[in-house]
Length: 302
Image (cartoon, rainbow, N blue to C red; front, side, top):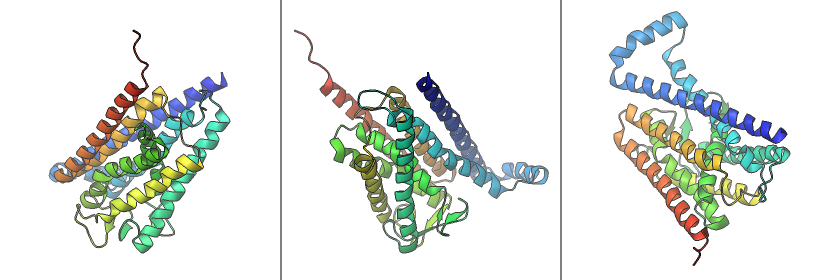
């Protein structure tokens, strides 16, 4: 019964957090599109909100963004809670689930924070860049506190997708980097080119982003994936049904949000690049799932 209550609780937290996540996305995209394509129509509404509610445009931008980023790690934690608490024999232990879930959270966040702190102060490994003030208070004045848990949230999903490629331990680590880089195809244009949450000091060939940024993403993601795989024991070869269904959905929702921001702020080519990256990621997972399932299937009786 305790296991059933735990299962119900983590599923409930996942659904609630994912609902808030989707609501923040829809609010942000609707507002961004209205401001970009019909500013005259938006002006009276913004004026009324400012006068009657005391909420300015900057707050209307920050609030859903902060909510979005705050629930990312909550969604990931709840999504993989049972997965990380279940051993190879299919036995779930709540204590194991808490220990391993917290370990994954801390590892992904710490490595992401370390890479970002080095990156914002030295330019390695992402290229010279800096964060603006829209993402709130910063660690040591450089990296917003919301950023490290985001590394955990997206990297654990990417690690899960990587394990579905059926390429062993090295493949799971490499897959983490691959899916993270594909996700960034629209993220950086959305948050740097379309709307400046951060900026690259010297600009860059890819919508204001230097190509070295992808090398930085790959290197950081490889380090996180290696920590998940080798230091923390990884995950079982095949995900449970709940994770198998919702992990790609969570990944796709994040990617589509960035694609939508690019479209809302008039960057259709960046949106196309992001949509292509997402399509490639999902097609790869689907293809590999089919081939690994076929390979694992027993031979028909004769």
